[in-house]
Image (cartoon, rainbow over all chains, first blue to last red; front, side):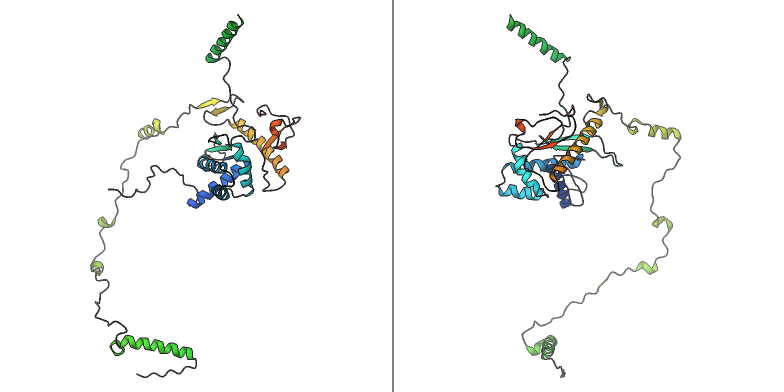
Length: 163
Length: 180
């Protein structure tokens, strides 16, 4: 009976490995979270953005509790290395995301980095930021079958209402 | 055994007396009675009982025993066989079928990736907005505690932009940046 897992098997492990050690991984993610709260849109390798996304959203959930909460303040103090961002988190981001139940960030993939490593890059942004939008929501053209059928139905309804 | 130790310092003499007393007690435990446990006979263990005998006796090992056998190709692979291996479909680069045309600018893009040209446009505009923000803030660590709104030339803040910080950009509003 195998009592310990063999080396090089990582079934079910959810956390990626970054940096030099687990503490270094947390520091790296902490820097990214601070940058996201400061600039509201950052461009980083996709794996780091994906890993950081969970931590950022949980931090906003903590911030929604209010700044009187002891645990929320301790979390914000650890995760945001620049202390003026704690004010921004509790006074700007928490009210902005109060109506939303979850998913405060948007993660989109970008063409690979230009350097030698051609890394898979992503841009992660907080929803509702004042910067120009990355993706414009496209409405279907009027010539599609469904839209033409709906147009015909609307015209029929108007004729029936006029008559 | 009498040892005369003449030392000028009383502390050193006391220390020497204590050491000598401890030594005497260790050497003649029966004399000073009952203070230290009697030493019994201890088993003397001989270290390194396993002395390899055959080192000096063995002659030089024969070639067949010391050489490690490794695999090596026996025959030359012909160019036909090599071509079959190199051009096998699993070795060729996969054809990408997820390339589309961006509806905004007409450049090619992968379906699940943002268009490179449109993203470069947005990135440049974001950089200019951030420069304006930096100029307005003046220094590092001056993040305001209110929301921000970006206004272009000739635009007035609406009633939705009541308590927000206004960032002015000295150009016409681009068509892809829709004002909310």
